[in-house]
Image (tube, rainbow, N blue to C red):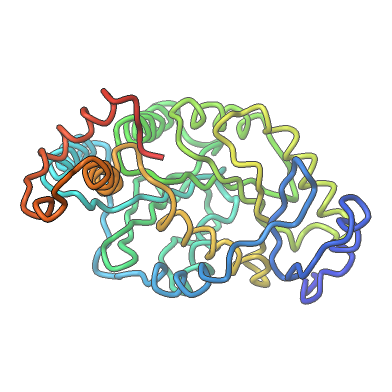
Length: 311
């Protein structure tokens, strides 16, 4: 096992491919597989990550399929009366990809069920973070060969319903085992998730199982295998829960998911845009604070009618 404390070979390789790298922190292993360059997040994300990643342990919800419809309907009702609604960030991956270990490493708390038996997670497990402004969702693993057909259909129905109907998903983190590479089930599931038009962030796990000087080539190769999926971000994260390699970078990514990414119907974003438009067109700006904005669902329809959508 390697420590990745310096990661010099990786940086040197990238420098040869893309020209000299300027002030690139070597401990941040995220790659743009199109340009073969190291990627970093602005420093402020490190400050926000500490606040974003505080898990409220009592606020944990296990959502079974039988309760999912009620859960999603409540979301829709809340959307009508609340401008600021929590964002949801879901982690998905093959059984035994190391998802639970990764979540525990990211949040420095045992929130994932680590088990030697694949397929332990069979529900959507919601953990409240960022003081209720977001949820991290632990999804069930796919590709478990011993899962019976009935259970597999139920699992697929659970995810399909959630991905198609939740209005609050800001990013889907899809985990791939770096040591094994892309499997047929990974491609099938990636196509399944891509269909629902959510931003997909690919994370390559178990990098401690791969030789350090092979990491770049493997990451770029996987990137080229998935680049035709239009909702996949061109940046892939490399990590290891075993030695905490890449964990800090993923924390920054989660912070950006909460702060920068808007879910499909992010009404708070719409409200600010409408207020800006009113300020630009109003002759008497002193009257603006006293004006009543239309209900949230009407604001969304108005924005769509004007040809605008949340970014």
